[in-house]
Length: 217
Image 1 (spheres, rainbow, N blue to C red):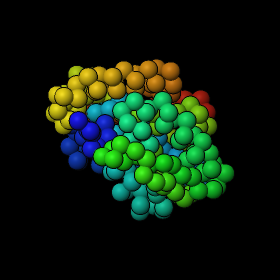
Image 2: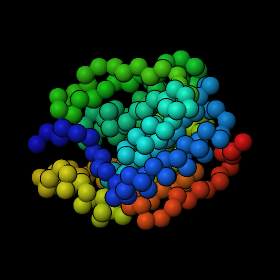
Image 3: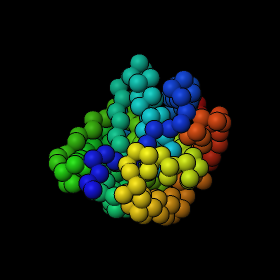
Image 4: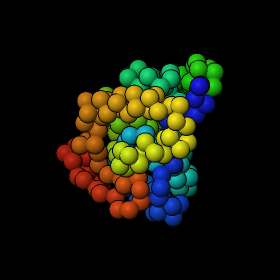
């Protein structure tokens, strides 16, 4: 079975809860100095099925009122289910690298139906760039990340969400994916480095953590 869509699922939190969290994260990001050239970089990382995509979309909708905004999904850079380790370096080199110098970045866009890269997407410098998905909070460009958000949900719940959407024939594929993302997040210490922890179930408020090297104005 060829997977027509990337490995993400919607969060259990209702739209009202997502909107509140989105407003809080956007306000915090905009309160901090520009880090990516003249703009800001908001990375939303966490395991598949935790609710990153829905949160990112809500933030982007709000951010459009405050200036130019861009959104990049890590899933669009993966060359299939086992492409996680290869995608992360490309983000640092081809997307963030040029943008940190004030030049347009780019990335190869993967078509999950065709199972191949189908073109290059150019990302112009913007006031706010949101990069969401597994591996988005890479240490390779931590120095230009304005805010790193970690979205989480219980492992069993995330797996159930995946099976409900993708079907049981992808059970082993999902298990392999989860092992790959666990390895990446452990190596990158992504959760430990996050500025904000977000509960993807909507049952708890976001937890803000001040870390060295990141401070609001």
